[in-house]
Length: 476
Image 1 (cartoon, one colour):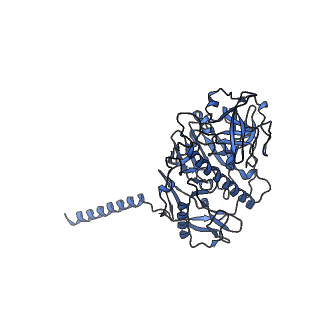
Image 2 (cartoon, rainbow, N blue to C red):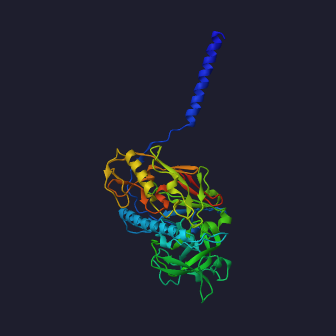
Image 3 (tube, rainbow, N blue to C red):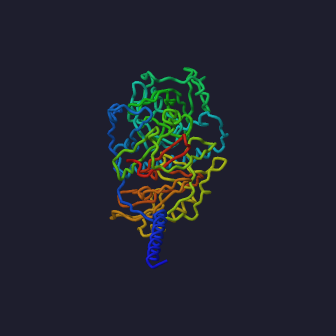
């Protein structure tokens, strides 16, 4: 090999080495260790301006196989409250809901396992669970009467307050009157739909199907009926729902609830054929954006950028969306002491992790939370500590600062790593510059992924594929 050939050989060899190194380096991205948090105050009470659905959207005909509607936080229905008061009430509702969900999960461990294609083993209405946090506006009946309905992935049934009302809580709109709807129809006690309920009742006066709703200190009956629901201009006929004449709860002005759980009476299951068993929502960060949140039913609900994790089946309780959480990273490193075994759903229905639209603050089993909290404290040791606040035991005094660096937090689900924006886990708790780590521990075996952590993601529920997906920056 002459000198010229040697030069060429070394040149191309060096060039090949460079490109190989470039490709390897490009393929490997070091986990992000920190990110910037832009500091904002508690959100002001939102102004709710919501015209009747006949004027919503464009003038074009809606796609019959897709529904997309705006969603607002329940604070919009709370009048004359300060940001601090609204946050206080939110934490109160949250504590009540987590207690109820945990009790429900524990109670169902003793229930016999159901089989076949029947409906949920128990009608979970949401009313005893401390309400939900987000609502939409839809039409009920023919002609449609527009009301606010809470959206709840932890509930199995659609229901609303109905006239005549023996005991009803205060709601923003007039209470629905079934006698004025041409599409309202009772469900007979002999119908297969009624017999599929776990504990159906029968009205001796009308021979209409009823079901029981249990509260902490009593119970009430609801009339099981069929009715048409209208989303913008899209009608969904023959939806089985509960008509409540004796109600109580923490529903802050909403007329009732649209159950989005996995049970057979939930709206996604009932309308599954039309919408291909798919829906998604995106909850905006209200401290940073005035844009409303949204929910979509149909194939358009599935984001192309979503990363999916399988839904885990709990044979004892088919309402909730159980996911397999394998671990958590803080500052780019796996948290020691957190393993998949802390979140495992066992054969008795104990444990597990659910994703829930109606819980605000994520709850983790106590050992997992302590390990996560301690890892975050180490990564945020440069920040000035502040006193605890309510359920939050890790808080910081960030007054007089516009932005700070905080360690990253990533949840590792099977098949999907979910990296949270900083605003999803270090949140303002007052308007004096105190920010707290927005996770909490629970002595229950049930861990819950709350809506604060879900903000900004399009969360996709693909029931046909038995999977849940997360698409970052999904509210655009």
